[in-house]
Image 1 (tube, rainbow, N blue to C red):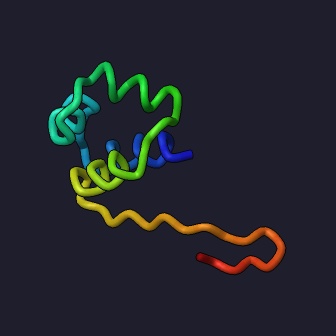
Image 2 (spheres, rainbow, N blue to C red):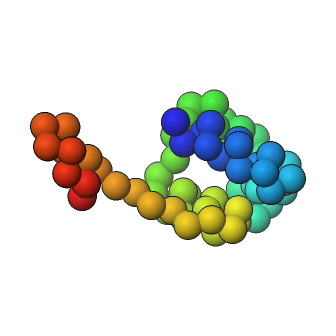
Length: 69
C-alpha cells in the first residue's frame, strides 16, 4: 500500500504530515483523507516523492510471466 510506505518515509525523514502537506501544497486534512483511503494519483505520488527526497518507480508486473513493464 502506498499510504503505508508514505507513513514509513515520514518517520525516516522525521517529517510530520502537516509538513508534507505544506510541501505538496495541500491541506493536512486532505492528505490525511488520502492516506486513509490510500487514494493517490500519479501526479500526487511524484510530488510526495520529491518532497520526501525519494525517487518514484511505478511498474507493472504481468502475472503469468513476471515480466516487469
